[in-house]
Amino acid sequence: MTAVQPLTDGDLTLRLATQDQQVVTFEVENGNPLGTVEVRRTSPGAGLVVWALDGGPEFAQRAVRLLSEYAFTELGLDRLQIDVDPSLHSSMRVAIRSGFRREGLLRGAALVDGERRDVVVYGMRSDDPRPDSVLGWTTLMDSTLPKKRVIAHVVVQDTTGRVLLCQVSYKQDLELPGGVVEPDEDPATGASREMEEELGIALPLLGVLAIDWLPRWEGWGDAVEILYDGGVHDPTLLETLHPDGREILALSWHSPEALEGLVSPLNARRLPQILAKPSQLHNLSNGEPI
Image: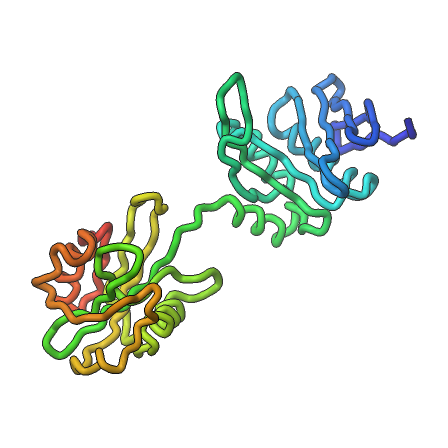
């Protein structure tokens, strides 16, 4: 076994214990033995980092950082990964604070005592910014913080007070034009893009009518929805619109008093109150005023 100088960080020392083509193990000490940290090659250029340490998460974090830099510089690895049981919150903190981004959840990926357990995957590449830099820290935090969907719908009326609704191909409820805002797209642009895709035209947006928070529903996570004012138009506007024929099958005008049973309970709650006071910004939670 080739001699390797101990890796140090203040009072923490990693001494090479064993090394072969698949696994490199270091013993960790700070005057007293703390345990081990190791990297296991899983594929060319990639390795899995594991540790079994006493002394708390601070020592584990420092040991994992030392091992990671050794794996990148001396072992020539390009990518490291840490797999964590989501119930082990301290281990997830160690992964993040050592520079590993949260990359996803593998449902039922581990079998523990006959029980299927989820596995949270954290990863770091050799060229990732390190956690002691501003970019490195913000990137790490971005990988762990909640990510809500943003939905942008457009409320279009005619001169008789009716609202434009779409017959969609994937559910029975009639729906407003619009949809989910794409990553790196501002909500107004998303609303205009969705109108262009669904109706064949992007009507001018005159402002925001409502901001609504939607709780989890039917497999969807919670979301923030923005309802834009698409203006008041002559009923003949319908003749100039061209539904895409795939997602949007047909378009029609409907009065606010006749929405019950045609739209979702959410839209049946909120659309009449929004249309009754279109000059007011409605702050809603699940269709109810806050």
